[in-house]
Length: 272
Image 1 (tube, helix red, strand yellow):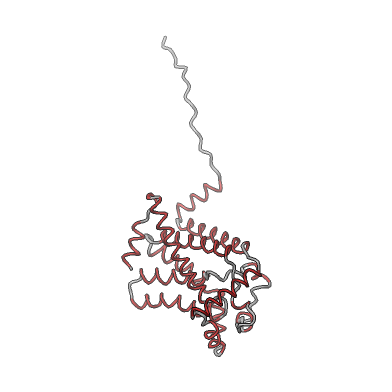
Image 2: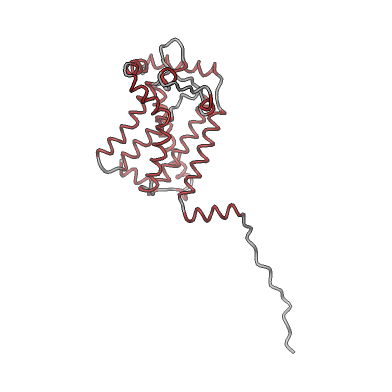
């Protein structure tokens, strides 16, 4: 009589599934761009919350602002009052720039990344990572070097055009929770614009579109300086921080060769 095998087969390993996670994976498989939306959404929340939490001491922020103004005066950079005085003679333009300051980069920056993702996919991860790295660097600067913006400085002749011309109060109501009043340096308004202008100018083909891209950071400089929200130095710092973000990503790729996005970096270099 044949012997019946008594060896029992080990139960197959079961995969633990989390309904929400599985649904997210399925949605991401159908729409890969959802991952990017999630990355930027999380980054925005972290950046805004961190920016609010790192508000420096007012006395330190105003002391640093005074030192910065003295530095600009001694180096010939102190042109903010001249720019603002010209704008105050053109109140319709001032009002338009106030509105642009409040909403411009919230619209243009996302549109830039959507265009980059759809039309320049190879470059997109490189620029996205540099952008996120630059924001992390900016947060560190806000912590160690709080600076009050020109519109809060008394005695130097600055005018808060947001409040005086457009009746926008950044220090009261809902808006008060969205702004760090002592985060003038660096200006990420300009930093974002500088990144968009340079990257777009390198990637676009038509010369007119390149000029349009490069005009955007120039418009932002006029806006943030003429409305007394930033010093000239802040724009220089913002551009430096963005450049540091790209350097940080490049350095990270050399430390971890598996993460190198050489096609993206090479594409930008070819454009340059």
